[in-house]
Amino acid sequence: MISHTTGSSLPFNFRTLSHYSRRNTLRSFLWAQWLRFPSSFRCRVYRFLLAFGRTSSNSPDLQRLPFGLVYAKHGGSSVIQEALALQYVADYTSIPVPEVLDLTQDKSLGPIMIISCVSGTPLSKKYSRLDELIPDESTRIADVLRDWLNQLQYLRSPYGRLLCGYLGGAFSSYRISTQNFIGPYRSQNDFHDEPCCLLTPAHDAKVRSLAAIIRQKRYDISFVHGNVSPENVLVNRDGVPIGLVGWECAAWMPSYWELTSGSWSVKGRSGECVWSHILVRCLPQYTDELKVDRELWRTYNPY
Image (cartoon, rainbow, N blue to C red):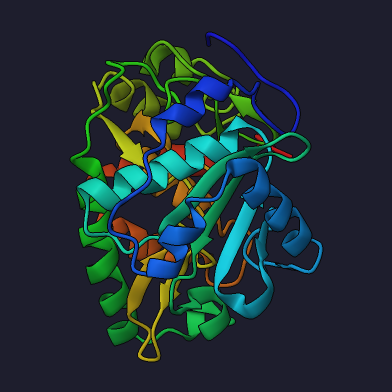
């Protein structure tokens, strides 16, 4: 591993803000006019609105601003990285994601990201228990997610074999650590030598043998959402996915990571097997990797 960053945010470099480019295709003429105001003025207004905002049930860092039209998120440069990831996915895939409406720098709050609301209900709210899903419903969900995740699999990293965040540095992963940012890693071998990936004699011997075989593979380094959970998949009234949110764990990772990290998101919860089965139907080529990761879950604790 190259570096390890602790705390709630990454070191902020204002120059990274320049990677963000505002669109000329904003749907609202009034919003386009709003962006003509100086950044300092917009930040003052955002700070005022945040005082009356409502925390999102999906993410404690995300607040729905008054009137329910947009969401706001602020913090370190991880917010910039998430905004750029959203912009990148919107540009190169057809996955329905929140639109980044503004990204600016506040002296006290740090970077502030304003994003649009995405229609739909979190899958976890529509089905309080995933094991309530009937086969036809699971199939509809898997069919849509398969298309979305395969689109991400085709996005290749500009950083070679480096495992890293969108901008090439550290990133967030709830599968590895809920407290600290992790990485970047020079290669998949360096990553597999980390405690989160290491099998010991305490683990099942057959799984250790399987891991020794599959760790010889050279995986594509693809762009991953990193936390495909029922909370982050938005569905319509019929239970069909119509939006994917919660991109704070997006990163350049081995192509199997979407399956293992997404399965981890429901570990120990009702319907865990149902959700894993849905994700396996999306990425069936990585079932061995999931088997190895499940064995690691017995002893590894990211909390």
